Image (tube, rainbow, N blue to C red; front, side, top):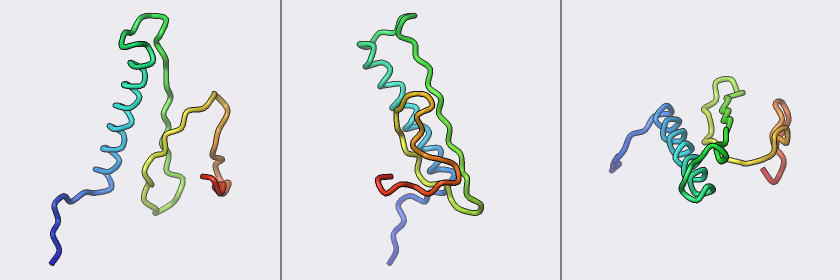
Length: 83
């Protein structure tokens, strides 16, 4: 007997992942500034999620923080063992 409590789709998973990412970023920004925001503590984050595979579902997003131009993934390159 199969019991389905919640039926999710690919689109639902992506939406839930993006909402979770947004909540995480907002809470990290608020806690880094001591719970207060002023003009000197405003930060900008760029989030890019891109599916580079044809006909494959998008895997759950991975959240990393790094300096600008210090990427951990290369388009067309195989993933490293640590990844």
